[in-house]
Image (cartoon, rainbow, N blue to C red; front, side):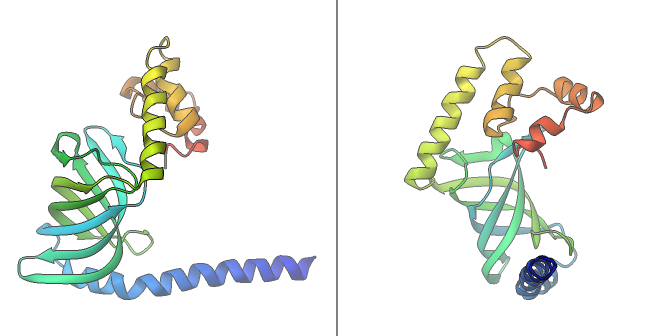
Length: 194
């Protein structure tokens, strides 16, 4: 039994090490490309996570296929994290599976982060909606959130987060109260909070 546990641990460690090794060339290239930080960049990307509201901004993870800064272009898939003002997203609804272009400033991600680049977008334009199955799932989620909003508060704010990981309805006051009462783990279990 101990041999199996050791083999499983070694396999997991190998998987993590290979992921880090595969991401390292992109991290170095992006680090050099984004040196100095804050310069305007344009990205073509596909959203790979839920789009989460944090304050007045939307945050999401994506795979960028190209990053442009002036006349320079960096090609190749790379993990990025994007923050954009909620009112700066144009085109179709931004959601998991959407294809979009982003314009903003960027800094290199920290070595321990999945994202090799963090982008603070001024503008996001959705070019293509999510694929059919993801669009159906998003529609079902949005309908659930809308119907839950008709229930009495504060339960109506919590139910979508508990059931489908959607925390858009959770007010700042409720979030603060849940943290003070050490109940924020309820939304973390659902995948709603990092």
